[in-house]
Length: 75
View 1 (cartoon, rainbow, N blue to C red):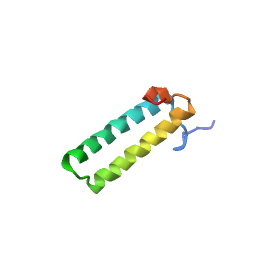
View 2: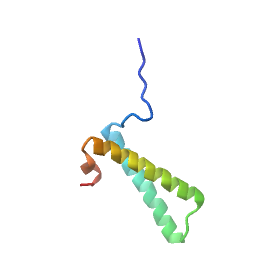
View 3: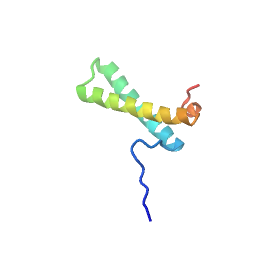
View 4: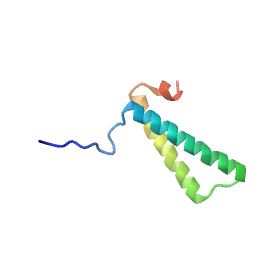
């Protein structure tokens, strides 16, 4: 009997991709709003923002491959 494990590069199931995209989008927006309110962004928050943008890009690619960008409001 063999055990199959998912690799980090395996595509996400569509519901997971949607959840990951929306969660990352919400957090990225919070960081952007905070930076606008204070007029600056710390290095740590900038790194976090880059991470969330990367998560959004990965989820978007998964949804694009599934032909379901409409689920995140992209035509």
